[in-house]
Every structure is written in structure tokens, then in C-alpha cells.
Amino acid sequence: MRMTLGFIMTTVVIDSMGIGLILPVMPALLEEIGDIPLSEAAIWGGLLTTVFAVMQFFFSPVVGALSDRFGRRPVLLISLGILALDYLVMAVAQVFWILLLGRMLAGISAATQSTATAAIADISKPEEKAARFGLVGAAFGLGFVLGPMLGGILGEYGTRAPFYAAAGLAALNMVFGFFVMPETVTDATRRPLSLARTNPLGAFFNVGLNPELRRLLLLFFLYEIAFFVYPAIWAYFTTARFGWSEGMIGASLAGFGVAMAIVQGGLIRVILKFLGDRGTVLYGLIFNACAFTFLGFVTSGALALSFIPITALGAVVIPAIQAVMSRLTPDDSQGELQGVLASVAAIATIISPLMMTTVFWRFTAEDAPVYLPGAPFLVSMLLMLVCMAVFLAPRRARPA
Image (cartoon, rainbow, N blue to C red; front, side, top):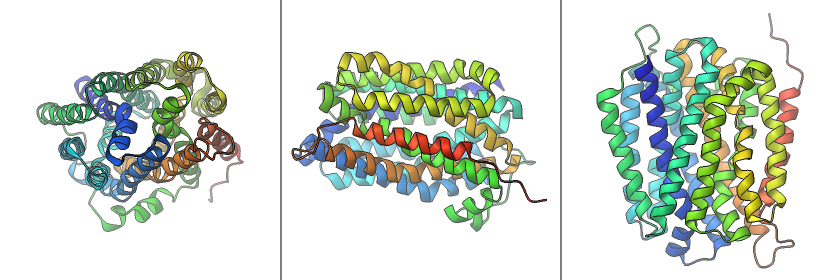
């Protein structure tokens, strides 16, 4: 059991390293390929993220259902192979449409974290799930420490180097998983494949039969839109507001990753113990609303850098929500649930980058009514308030 858990955590760490590796160089890469200013590069960056999310929305339920039928192991290995190919495509891209193709491939194969989370659910007792989902977040945070640091360093030698590194990491992880990853789906929990469960609408219908799950899905959706402001805007925001280099952007993201690893790997257990799942969600929403307000108006790079680790203290909402939803879902549908959550996150990712980068462009362009690079964070703050309203709304009584 410990070896299985350890491998899954290692998988998430290496996968998130690949994501973090490319973040610091995206603004420079888009400016280089398109010969455009930073404000326009942010719009194109948002489009790339949206295309990724569209593909993820359509394919995540398929992948979740496939993992319920054929197991987590083959799904993870195939996904990693496609991700390695995707990074190689982006490494050689000289025109925008090739970057677009690369993001489409990545969206199709972006089942790794949701499948890893389903594997965690397979091997965890109900009372262990919240803390272990927190470990997944901590592993992601740890990878986010190492990835941006390495990406920032490699970015100083060229915008393509981080993509080759990401491809290598995905390929090595695939080989590692081939020899180490056991199958966590058993004959007792294996479920036949059906068309209704391999399309987004069918999967949403199945999960949404539970009224409480529907409400939690709405909360999850709104939260993902708001929280995605970090990857959607951070590189552009810090370049425009503070003039940070690729290395500095990478270091700041690494600081956020360290704090996330600490919060989701250890501190969340203390918070859950004293506040419970519901209190933890409410605390996280309030804290994030305050953090987004601060980032919306901060003008000092040194102050922003010192505040970055503190922002991670609100990163307890998703593990707590996942734990509640997992306990409300049958054991043979954990993969389907994680696929639906991945699809919900994908819809949020379709909306958020376009919305956030458009707000950023509107408040940083030459004809901006007010120069305010932090405006997207204020949008996220308002969304946190909506999340609180949804979470605190009276629960419907279940029909007898």
C-alpha cells in the first residue's frame, strides 16, 4: 500500500513539474512567435489554455470511464506517453497553429491527475480520503516548486529548453510507471463500459442524480474559475506590474508551490481536525477572497513576493470538497466522479483564461481606462463571494 501511494505521489510530482517548467517562458515564447506586445500575448496564451480545456472537457469522462473498466495503470501510462509527445511538438513549434495542436494533444491526455486521484480513492478508507487528497495537492505543489525553478533557469538559455525537459520528465515517468505501478481497480470495483458514461452529459447526469453532489459541483466550478487566475495571469501580471524576468517568475511560483505542499501535505490535517470538511471549505473561501483583494492592488514586487507563500493557506478547499463528494459516490464510480470533476475543471478552464486575460488586456492596454494589472484578481475575489453564497445556501431536503 505504501509503495502504491508513494508511486502515485511521485507521478503527480513529476507531472506537475512538467506543467511548471513551461509557465515562466510562455509570455516570451508567444511574443517571439507572434511578434506581438505582452498584452496581446496574454490573449493568445488564454486561447491556448482554453483549447486545452475544451479537449479535456470532452475526453475526461471517457478517460474516467476507461479507467473504471480497464484500470488506472494503462490509462496513466498512455496519457504520459502522449504528454511527452505534446511537449516535443511545442518545443519545435515555429508558428502558432503548432502550439495549438500541442495543446489539443495535451488536453486529450490530461487524465493523469484525475486518474491518480481515482487510484487514491481506490486504496483509501472513507476517513482517509480528505487527508490523502491533500497529499495529491501537496505532491502537485512540490512539483510546482521544482518545475518553475528549473523552467526559470532553463528559460534564461532559450524559450524552448523547458519543453524538452518536460518531454523528458513525462517519458521517464512513463517508464518508471511501467515497472512500478500496480493496478488498483479490482474485479469487485471494475465496471462495464457504456456510452452514457463516456460522454460529458451522460456522466454529469449520473453524478448529478444526488442533489448535494450537484450543489458541490457548482461550488467546485465557480472556485476553479476564480483560482485559475494564478496560472492564467501570473506570468503576465508580474511582468507588467513588477518587470520580473523568467527566473524571478519561476522563483515566485516555486515559493507558492512550497507553501502549497506544506498546507496540503500537513497543515490541512490540522485544519480538518479542528474545523471539519465544511469549516475547512468556508475558511478557504474567506481566506482566498482576502488574498485576491490584496493581489489586485499590490504595487510593490517585494511585498508581493513575501505574500506569495501566504496565499497558499487558502488551498484547502478542493481536497475538502473532493473528500465529501467521494464519500457520496459508490466505490465502482470513483473514476467517473474524478472524470466529471476534471470536466468541470475543464469548463472552468475554458472560461477563466479568456475572461482573466481579457480583463488583464483591458486594464493594461494603451487606451485602458485605469492601469490595473491586478484587475483579474479582483474578479476572482468577487467569485469567492459567490462561492460562499452557494456553500452557505440552505440544503434541500432529500426526497424520501
